[in-house]
Image (cartoon, rainbow over all chains, first blue to last red; front, side, top):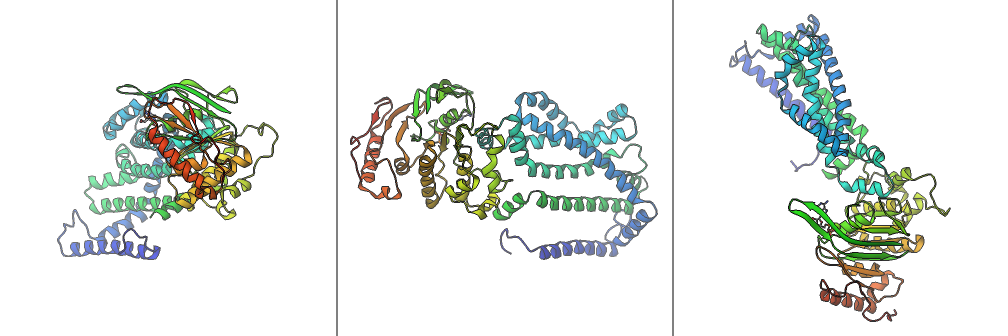
Length: 263
Length: 272
Ligand SMILES: Nc1ncnc2c1ncn2[C@@H]1O[C@H](COP(=O)(O)OP(=O)(O)OP(=O)(O)O)[C@@H](O)[C@H]1O
Ligand SMILES: [Mg+2]
């Protein structure tokens, strides 16, 4: 194997699929041999059967779309507020002074602990779910983007200013396009966190949602359902990540090229 | 004509103010190349940023054609050591980057402005290069792009902060020729920071030496060379002599001596 040399796409895919297949095979063999307790660690076949039941009879797709909807809204609000705020803070230190203490403070407060307060404040409807997802991502996102923005070398702004750019133009023509690929990637990571916080968000009074399915599975000790839910969440993550990465190459062809060159 | 008289420039630091520049006087007539020479960390980059109007927190003043410089403008451009590219734009759009900030009234004197193609040609970027992304260019080509981009707004003065030092030999020589051609063709003045005595000699009409921090402009050295330089100049006896003169003179320069005096060791009689 050559050091840090890209593989062909076909070779990469074959290896990845083989890895997944052998994991499942090992799992099947262990289950068959009775090494794993079937109560806590069901066999692949029974998990498959449970998946069929959940999807076909219990409408797991509806749960998935309910969860995806919650995440979509919270993530969108988080991004639409968080990214501009971070850029604004980075450009104007007075703005940073106003918001930084709040952001830094809330970032360390464990979001699950706030759940009762969210319920008190916003009832038991969609309010607390939104707030969990929002609090779980917004403050982290602000901090990440702020760090990225602060790291843009001053020479870029200097160059633009000697070409006549004013403050607004510096933001529009230098800061934002410079950071776009990084922000895009930060959003990808943030979206991943949303799925993590989902299970907490859906602890309170929900009828539909993947988090709800997990909670029910725990309640009734249905290990197979738990497995299905977790695998589904993992797959959703894998697929969205893949799609977002595809988009990265499309939106930022120049960045993809330089990555190729530097590897 | 760019004129500056700086009395003091300091940066705030935890242990009080850190004085970087002392008294520095500098005059850059039109179509002149002034080279700044000085020890590492003596404040050359700081001085350039002041000249560009990027740093206004100092005691003293900078005048461009009799008007005080109070902020950055298109009249004074800058090229830095790191080949700077707006990676998200094609090379062509990089060159034209400054256009979007141009006020509608320029060009001031109704003169014909150089086109993108003309400038690309001057710095040696091909039509093919123009359609690439900067990441597809070599470091030397990127720096040529940065030059062309800084020149397109037609600055009166272009400040060069060690723009050649990260480049290979060939690109370095090419860019030096570009500087000379630009001066010739557009009457642009240059203030160029460099650590390379040969480069300084080849380009400079006037060499200004700064002392260690807090820097003062110690003295000016006017190389005894014919005004017109060609690549051949480097191999003439005059050039070798001038190099010896500069070396000897630099080793003799000590802070506090000959403040501001113009020195031309052999009285300007050298002919090729
Ligand atoms: N923004 C700043 N804040 C505080 N100190 C600074 C700042 N910029 C520069 N300095 C200090 O001012 C001094 C001069 O820096 P400057 O970069 O102008 O030197 P230089 O002559 O360009 O050095 P070099 O030859 O290494 O490029 C240095 O000691 C540096 O630490
Ligand atoms: Mg410097």
